[in-house]
Image 1 (spheres, helix red, strand yellow):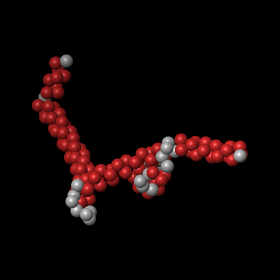
Image 2 (cartoon, helix red, strand yellow):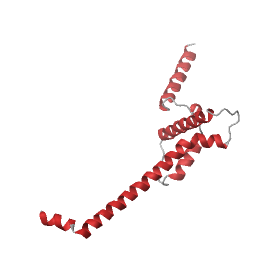
Image 3 (spheres, one colour):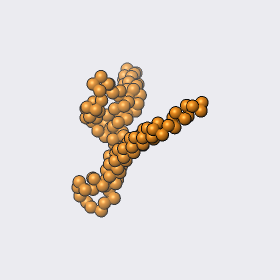
Image 4 (cartoon, one colour):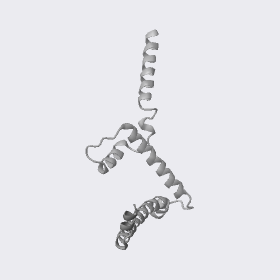
Length: 135
C-alpha cells in the first residue's frame, strides 16, 4: 500500500511540476493551434528570428480576445445566421484603426515636407544668415 501511495505521490508531483513549467496553461485551454499561429508569425518575421513559448501563448490568448470582441460585435445583430456583412461590421473598428495609422503616417510625412519647405524659405530669405551674424 505504501508503494501505491508513493507512486501516486510521485505522479502528482510530476504533474504539478509540468503544470508549473507550462505556467498553468495547458494546450487544451488555448483557442487556436499553436502550429498555425507560428506559421503565420514566421511568414512575417525574418528567417533567423525564433519565437519563445510565452510569445506563442500570448499571441494565442490575444487572438482569442480579438475573436471574442468581433463575435460580441456580431452578436448585436438580430439575425440568427451570421454572414460576411455582419463579420465586416464586427471588424470595422480594427479596419478603422489600420486606416487611422496610415492617415497618421501620411500627415507626419506632409508635416516633414512643410518643415523642409520652411527651412528652404528661411534660407532663401536670408534668415539663417542673419541669425549667424547676430551670434
